[in-house]
Image (cartoon, rainbow, N blue to C red; front, side):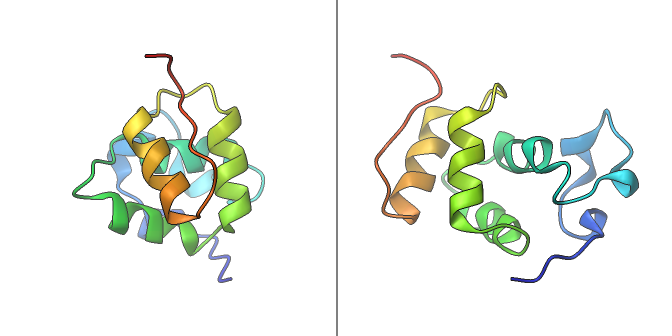
Length: 95
């Protein structure tokens, strides 16, 4: 797994509008980076979005972080992640 330190080359700047992206550390700040990377994801952009994350994190890190985050990740994205990793489906919001 390639653990590039420069996330400014991987993710769009608008996802991290409130932080200095150059100061983010992929391991230290994964609880911020993983949810933000999928925050604006849709069914059409999901593959590109998740592949960016997979450059930095394992599937277990991504799943565990999304299951525990307080960020507003859509249930659709959660279902897409679970399906991609053959994991039990989960949702961030009750229907």
